[in-house]
Image (cartoon, rainbow over the protein chains, first blue to last red):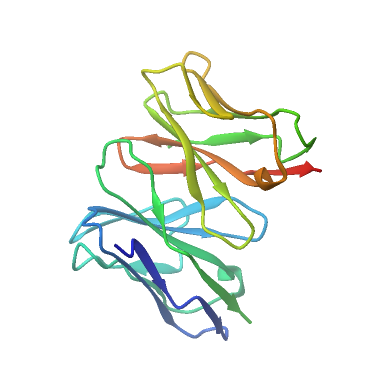
Length: 113
Length: 111
């Protein structure tokens, strides 16, 4: 199993540009999450999904959108990039939905200038 | 919603000493408390977890304690080694699927 795979690893955007951060998992996990981690800071929940077709907002959803058309994929969309969105983005999944640990991808480092 | 506070933000210890990181949570419904270690430039990885029906759990040099009444839980690392240097995050999960993280503790182990 590859686990949770994120692409790209790095990206530089100009203000106002759009992009999609890809996340896919091969563990057949129902629960998937997007977190952002600002430099030297903790992890903030952006969006989460409890299964295909179901998504919900986390702590910091503004400026982002997600979709969950399949169990495997959970892309994160930035429509109008702003410098405040400069961060490292982690996708994670969790299988049991009953108090089990998160499996993280390797992250996407995004810089908006 | 759940809020998790973590202290200290930075901790420096001598190799071989113990390190203790403390967290508090706000939602009494939280019932799962994982700890993650994040090395520089890497993803967070689970090192130990505890569920609300247990007061203490140990795995070699790492132990976690939970006080549900006070809504406190702590990570204890004994006989610290330079490879323990990293950022440690506590977290709480309420409702079975949403994990909220503390702000992290940067641990330095001096050789």
